[in-house]
Image 1 (cartoon, rainbow, N blue to C red):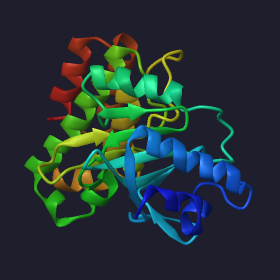
Image 2: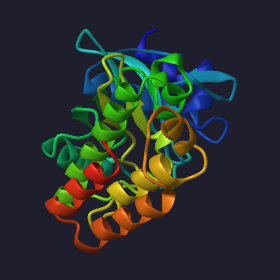
Image 3: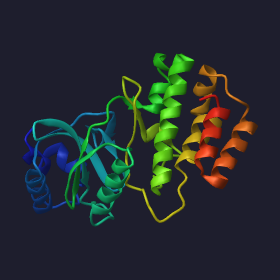
Image 4: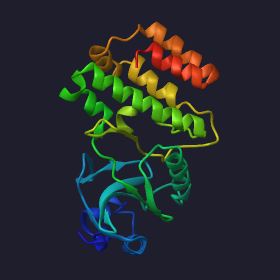
Length: 248
């Protein structure tokens, strides 16, 4: 659908209606056109106000879109957002890209980010699927997730939401992974990407169950000791020790 549709109908509800005025919505549509967005569509796994979208944060919504003849993910600041701009998130995502993590940032403005659309399903969905029944595939996905987290740790970027990787890690058909949603990321606090994700995937109650059923992993006590050792030094050696100790 043409980008003008964001100013009316279901798109208006997704972007903050009824608080948004027609003028605000029209301005948002014009800004998206200026950014190079030519079309948007309501599709995806998340239902918001009766409409389907790719994702939702507390300050923005992610839509499927067309940009320069490409299918992309379009993250738009809601008109009722407590944040005044998305430029800080754009800067953090660009830093993550430089470290080899996150969906590639293609374009940015004050109110929107155009990104590569992450392929696949969330890691929570993937671990519940038949694809996760093989130990080799599960180990590879967990290892790649932790390696991407390690890249963020080294870059000094704390994602802020990786204690819930089920919503923030996408697993592609080729089992490549993408960490998404840098809305809560920061470079001003101590990084905890590896420890947060590993705690959830290897020790915690929900996601570690499928991982442990597929793989022969050390006991939770040993896993906690390995995480403590990494948290203490955050060195290459302690990260290698974590992977090796967990059989990844």
